[in-house]
Amino acid sequence: ASNGRKKKRISKQAKAEAEQTKVTIRNARQEAMKDLKKLEGVSEDVIKDTESKIQELTDKYVKSSDEHLKVKEADIMKI
Image (cartoon, rainbow, N blue to C red; front, top):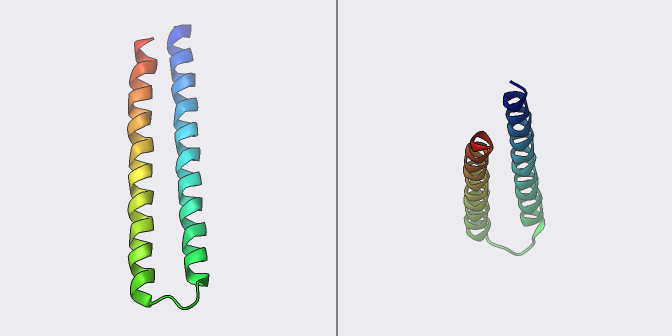
């Protein structure tokens, strides 16, 4: 029974780490969006295109974090 509790604790820790990773990714997105809006002399089209690319990268890395968590949880349960 204690092995099961240990697995749950480690799994919970992995989830917390993955959530913190996603927060960090989102914070980077916010900073990039703020910096983009501060640029002068850049066309609205370029800004919109860059915002779209920033969001695509955000989505890509959040998804990657989720996938890594699934693999890690599976590994934890095998122990």
